[in-house]
Image (cartoon, rainbow, N blue to C red; front, side, top):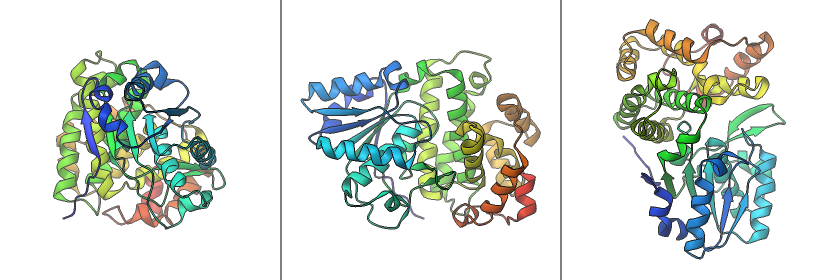
Length: 356
């Protein structure tokens, strides 16, 4: 078995200020990567700015990261960071800013390369990255992956390089201001990471251990996700920890069919990533080995597939997927070796059509 997790992770209240020395020790000038609104609303951006200022480290803020960030945005930010003379990158927010921060750090280290380098094999050397997650889904603070939108192909896809953050500072308190829709979507993404990592040809005792703990924590918040009770401090801690643990798992296994199929719904129909991933979890599990499927259901505290399906239907509702998107998704997924090879059961056109 193989396990490699080079990111130093802290998850606690006031996490950024508690570890400002380690954050500021990553370089001499910080390039902060974030979106336009949420990091200002939940206080995470201010915490990072205060930490840098107290330690005397200059910084520049780039707050133009869109949902599902594009290669074009990464390249724009790369030039801004180089012009400013930054030598380490801090991503603040959900998966979009964190993934973008990794790609930007890579491209800043390779100033002579164009955007095509992101999807070519080559050096993974990048400027140091710190991740400050403010949602509970992607686990990007604990993965080497960076998912970007490729407009020329009309799809999202992971870059070809592995960029682990050097430091992850996770404060569950940042989740307090997140809308319920964001908590639901990102929590379902974390659940999907665990299911796709557990039902995976690359699964090991180590990765399944992470998935089992993550799903156990995740299951304690099901009533919160359904809107049956308010989230308490313990729920927010569980959600954040579940996301990071799931990220550690997919760092080793990768994701599989549901994530691959979800990108078409997100790009073409604007379906939020977590919801798009969640839609395909029931058919992905239904086609899996019965014993393995039972182990996953047990950790999520569901009695059987019917109960799981009912929960997902209640949580996510239904979405009509146009026939041409279904056809394209099936056709191109059959050529997606990276996702197919991770699926532990045979996949053909009939299997994929059944996902819809």
